[in-house]
Image (cartoon, rainbow, N blue to C red; front, side):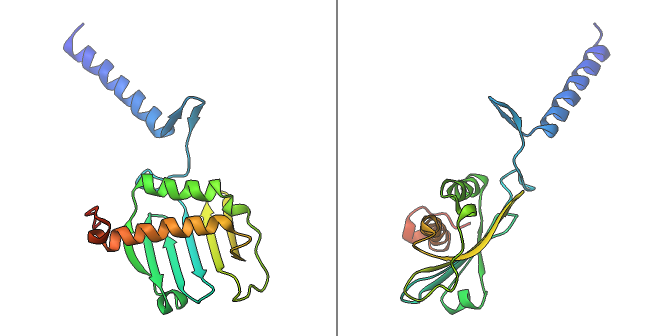
Length: 170
């Protein structure tokens, strides 16, 4: 076999493999599945979580489709003045999305006229064909506290790396 023939066959094989990878980015034991992905290849979703506690402490988190985490606390959270904290990696985005799935946060029913006697949550989420938008209280949205705590820990880690000891300042 000549050098040019081997090169031609090798290029054909490369093109075939490349086209298979482009058609199916995720191979699993069950077959080929392609979850919604962003430009970086990670999960694509948008999330907005607002929380007001019974003593009126307010926090708000937003993750855009590019994986940018934004945060605001106090008056800034009330007036929608969030600041960019970090661009989250695919693993972190997947962990957050898993909390949404594990806690069935897309299925929570909203609460009409919540009072100051409960922690208030406002939740917006969109990922592919799944979406949710509601306002509820702590008694009816238990998983929202877990999600809030995870997001709060993330923003703390990125904003104050010296306090968390991980040295991550992305």
